[in-house]
Structure formats: C-alpha cells, structure tokens
Image 1 (tube, rainbow, N blue to C red):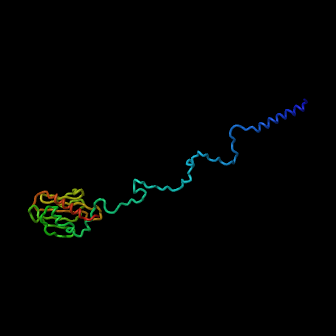
Image 2: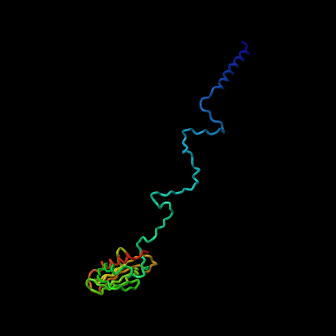
Image 3: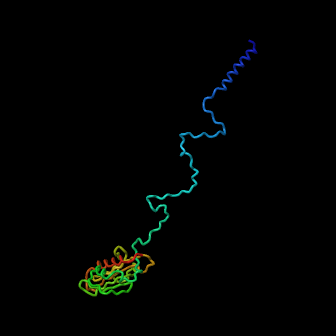
Length: 221
C-alpha cells in the first residue's frame, strides 16, 4: 500500500472514532445554562416553609385573654359607689328621723325613750334605764381629727374603724370615723350614753349597739 493510501485509511479510522466520542453522553448531571428558569417545586415540598417575611410590617393586635374578662378592653375604671364603706352623714336632714325610737330603745335596753330633741345633726333622748329615769342618750355627726378634745377622751378603734372613747363607770361616749375624705368636715358619728351616776355598769355594749344601728342606717357616700 502506498504512503498516501495508508494516510487516507488512518484518517478515515480516526474520523469514525471522533464522531463516536462526540455522540457518547458524559456521566453526571449537566449544569443548567445561565438564565434558565428556576426548577419547579417538587410534590413533597412544604409551602409552610416559605418565607412569610412580607407580613412583618403589619401591626400586631393583642387578643383578649379568655380567662380575664378585662384584658384587652382598655377600661380599668372602677364601678360606682364606695368600696370602703364610707358614709355620707352630711346628707342626713334629721338624725332623729334616721332611726326610730323603738329601734334605739331596743339597742340600749330602754323601755321608755320619751320624746326626742331634734337638732338636725344631733338627736337626744331622756331615757329610762335599769329602773332609773332621766338618763341621757345623744347621737349624731361630729368631726374627729384624731386628737382628743375632752378630758378622758382617747383615740381608739370603734367597730373596726378609727375613732375615740370616753368611758367612766356611769358613761360611755363613742365616736368613729365613717368618711375619710378630707373635704368632708363632719366625718364621724358618735353616741353618748350618760346616766349621771344613776347606773354604774359597763354602758359601752349598749352604746356600740346604738352606733352600729346608726351607721347601718346612714346613706353611702
């Protein structure tokens, strides 16, 4: 075979092998061309895993606590009326009409109350007590600043409230604060039971029963 024929034959063989190599796929996954669209999500992808940062600028609205009826309402105002048992003695036109003579007689243990002396803010009776007559019972409204104003008077708690006591063997004078508003001058009520020596015993249980009766009858502040 001539040199030219040999060269031609070799070139033909190399051409056949070169075409075969170009047609053979390369192992592995080919990288996508630049600018190609993004891959579609698979059926197993979780939509909840997507970024929801687009809602971060929305205002947050607090929800009320179902266990707390006042939460989220924005209204913390209290209800009407006084929560400390404050009374309004200045609105009473007549203390003698506040409670009846029979009620007072039952409280002090008097069978005969007589006729009251009505001084609007003060009411007084001349009562029978333990078989004696002309014993004094007075009650009404007064001012108590915390400082004693009479000999023998001392600051004391009366029925759980601040007040005063003046106690002797034949007298019991009690006063207690019923309104702590500094704008209310007549802030207390009192009961003074004085037998002038006719009866010598502890008169304070009767005085306390009377002042409780009056307190309960007073209108609330």
